[in-house]
Image (cartoon, rainbow, N blue to C red; front, top):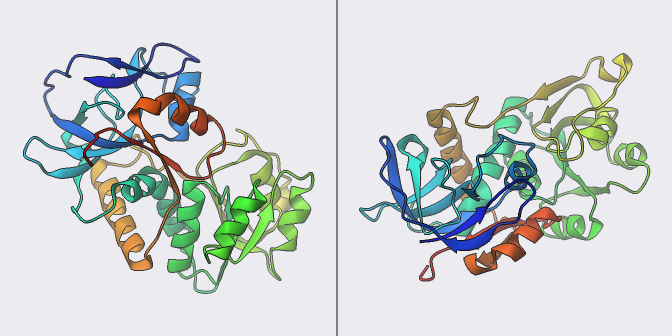
Length: 314
């Protein structure tokens, strides 16, 4: 079978032929149709996330068919099998049926990224009319977070990221009410200009580091920052007065903390949000034969979910 593998640290995936995976107790075989790339795939290869055993097949999620034809979404394949291959093995609890009429690329864009947005925003308990700031708003987590926040009752949704063009496109589509360009030398000032009279009531933060530090200084009294990632840095420095009467929460939405049943339930809520809101998440599609180009895009700033077409007849 075809598979995109990485052979060692700091390597790059390439397409090769591998034997079909053997049977494993408690796991099911899936014929992969679509797969997704995400930032953690890059971090694995850099050796900063979960220390993979090499060589391994890249990709952590996808859509495919069980032996009986059931269409499913899956994550967390049995190592060393990943998602970007013709056939993979996945623990039964991580295989979630999906309707035939939902778009595969949208489901992959929603699933892992969407859980990273929806779970912390649900835990933030957004109140009607609150002002919500989405850091990293142009990526999949940020886009989903902006859409979900509005459906949860946010009055104003502000998006912040480095690309003003990508931010403006989201504003033009009605996903964002206001935008803040980060990385121009004064994140504090830029974020403060859009904080309104009180400040930001809720912040969804997949960045941490300097952007989150600046955002925390514009959080309203009683406001909640929900941090879920460290793409911009692993530390931030704040004074006690900057933290006082504000709340910071580090939220883990992954399989090490949340059971498959909890994540499946959140996934189903996510699909319901998307259907009710008629969401359209930005995706970029590559065929499996162009895994090198897809990997290069993921290493950059794609401002979209990268989706790999594995099967030729879907």
